[in-house]
Amino acid sequence: MTKTMDFLYASVIWESDSIIQTFNSAPSIIQDQSARQGLVDIYESKAKESGSAPSTQQLFNAARAACAVEHDKDVITWLETLLSASGHNASGHTPNGGGHVTQPPVHPPTTGGNSNIFVNPVFFPSEQSFQQLVNTLDGAKSSLDICVFTITDNHLANAIIRAHERGVRVRIISDDDKANDMGSDVNRLRDENNIPARVDNSPSHMHHKFAVVDDAMVINGSYNWTKGARFDNRENLTLTNAPKAVQGFKAEFEKLWSEFA
Image (cartoon, rainbow, N blue to C red; front, side, top):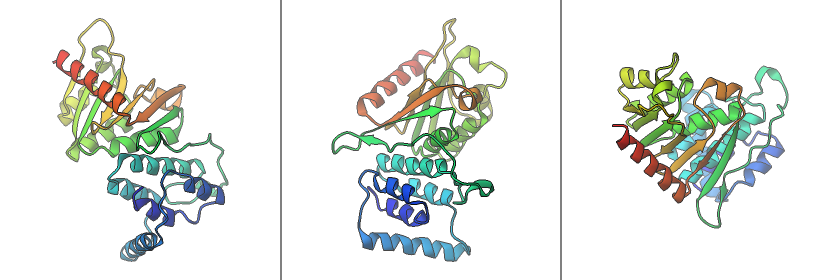
């Protein structure tokens, strides 16, 4: 686990005992006190520069950007989801002065043995799950291959645009009928943002809902990239870096990309 986790620990030390206990149960948290103090010093220097402490959201974003190991990034996202589920907003305060918000438990990413393989299921409707999806897209560094039946949620479209604008190679495969629906973002992303997109041109449907991030992680499940899936439907996604899953979904994407050329 990277030293970044200690930085986050310092930033959320004011949280409730239950949050701290759950945080301490995360895989591989390091106990290096000198490293912890060094990161606290960084936190304090940043606060002095800006005149105030950075928000919790800024800390999480910085922590993810500093991660060298994908599993560490996923654990950070899990902690962010946990913090949000406790009823605190990105600034670390309870919204509207309210108390604890009851949410389903958020479990840390699991690993097999001593490896860094994780399998992290998330469920909808849930703003915490949706934020985890957005954070995962925002964490893409080199490539983002998206193969989904439809995209109509502008928040996800904006995350795709952000990835494209920071130099990530983005490609989109979608269904030809859905790409032409009113409100679809697929053709807009292609025509207005120059993001490569291909469709099946077939009477049958291209019904996949998956994405491959940095050729290292797969997002896959029932979840269509729509507001209905986000706010209303019972949906699921699984995030995993299991090599067999990554290789399989990557191969399927490349096959369809060539077939739909």
